[in-house]
Image (tube, rainbow, N blue to C red; front, side, top):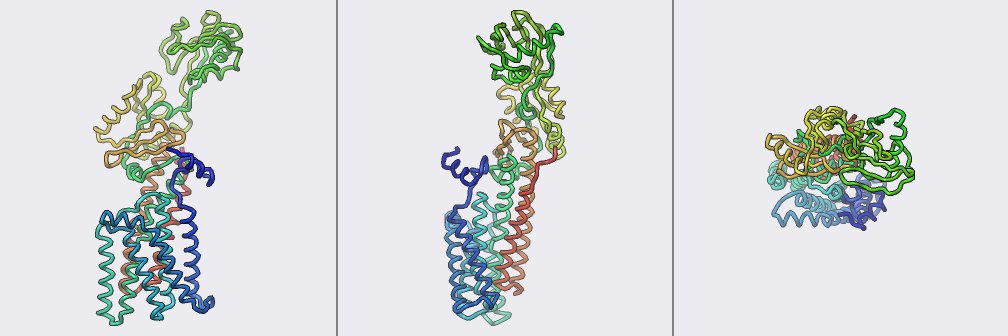
Length: 504
């Protein structure tokens, strides 16, 4: 439920709609990350550019790196506690180990007067992990799960690397450098950032387009959907319009439009609102609504009735749309037929759905003749007319029994079947078939992008670990590679901000 405090925050930072209720990093967290980033840049400059150094710069670099590491450890505390509580070795544990190892390596480099670049390893690893943690929190989704063996295997490779290098090269510093580099290379930067970053930028682009994806389960479900049930003609129409005005006497058509339109200004029914557009509002009095029949009243002191043809004494044959009779001064004046106004994009949207492997089905409460005509206009082959309260649920159950994976568009919600026989919902602003198409295409695009990014990050991590293990990637090199891969993932995910609606 939307709260007043949430709405107030949304107004303060300019967010509206679905975007207003997505998680945002706190101001304190953003300031901490910004400060850590600035300090890290300073440390890297000190370690790599002698011209900017000053007395005791080594102590400043190591102290700054340690402070960034402590900030990172504090930020990971909740995730770490959760993993330990569930006895799971995941991203938080591996990130913590990498940060602590990097911090220890930087402190050790200062104590032994090691290479100057090693003094900045802690700062670089700490700020990368801190940034990745911030993106995950804002995305409000978990990274792609690590295999249970990944963390123990990464740590085992690190220990094995040290042991092998001690055999190859008896210098402990060389062996430790290789082991530290392996641990840093295994740190889940790009790997832990891939899914959250793609999900974050994709869903926020959806918010802009009026498509609010609330659950990561929607992404996988969108790939399996092969049938879309459009529950109600409002999914393909934008209201009602007058299709014909037929006066019994040709000279009376103007009066027919005037009296019917004037009286219907007092109606709230969609058919009445369409008829009201035929004329201006007259002087009304004694207006009464007769449920199931129509409306009556006086227009400029003339008694008028508009409603079911048989109610006003007119016989009409069944036709497409809704036909009402008009009576003025106790005399039938003619009929007006109102039909659904098809959305301009409905036909193109249903064609695009079929091209993407999704068959549309229309469920509507109107008569079979009207439903068939409406379905033909929007290019839908299967239509269910005169639907009742349980028709859609029964139809969806039958379709599932046929082996179809179903999504239902109803009341501004696109509800998708998930692999776990549950349902995930996407909120739509307009609730029409074109927006449902946008939602499905966007969800599929995010899912495909996330999977590709995760695979790329996994390959990158494996290569970095291998290079570190054979001594081609020193600790600072591993830290910079970690930072570079994380940056590439974010930049790649940002491309989703340019996602546009499918052409219809």
